[in-house]
Image (tube, rainbow, N blue to C red; front, side, top):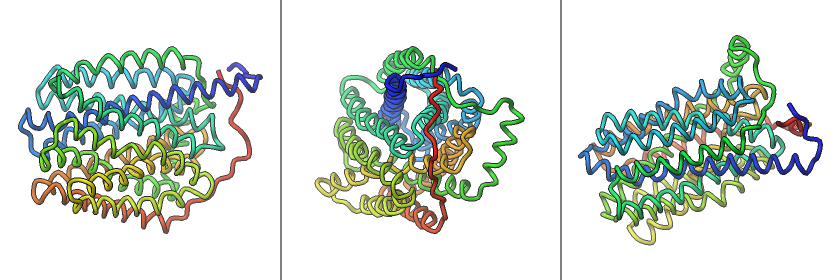
Length: 409
């Protein structure tokens, strides 16, 4: 790998890397958030139950969960191929949305959504390992910026989708969404094609030998499980708030889009703030009180009157809903070997997607049997339980003695 001797050039390279990766993450979340606005339209068009609707999202999460561990292996084994991995990730997301709109059958949409889940799974291990390697002393802050990019996408996605659904049918919107994602994939490839990572594992045998140690790390496994329970509450809110606004309150797609944007807008500011707190005072100092506050707000959402109460509650939830995930990732990376950062990221995502998907299914059953509002109470209880479990977990504080390697291609 080529040595970057000039500190200014090295700084520029790292800034370009961070900007490109964070922007790509923003687009990925823009699409995911836009799909949450399209979801009630698909539900109405295909006359689906709450359970069948939740299954659409769950199929995406499960496919991501299954593929995330192999994606973690690829990120660690081929750290000199991060740019190709990220490009393929966006390309699969673009293709999945194109097929979702073009096929217009429930089973076909599920298959297409599974494809987007595969693309989503490929993004995070490579992207987060790259950022973590370049910014070890500011890991929590940098990964939170990555999360803030996602929050920006979550803000823009519902607004764009909600507005376009006033003039386009949902299937047309999904078909046209292919082009921005495909173009961005080309940009990512062009900008990052010379990117190199740390020395990874040299063979499949070495990888599995080293990865086995991660599963024996009880603290890491506890972090993965607690992050996964937290993810259940996240998925419930993301799926059922748009359905609640559209079906129970009768709001238009544009108004629903505005509300879902409000659900994310505070996260743009709170992501780096929470990341800084976690770097300075420890991961638990940011996670535990924030998760308890988030849980109480989810419960409050079930009882909020339409209007000011509902709006303020949704804005407050938005301050927390996406901030925890990347701090959990930072905690997992802190206690993992450098050559397995991609795999430790994959563990967090696999647990979050698979167990989070189970939360969506159980919430769908609850919504059909009781009410959509009951799912918000369920989400609140789950995240508070996870916070209490984290409060008693002993997570070691990690101090970094050296900067990231300046050997960057």
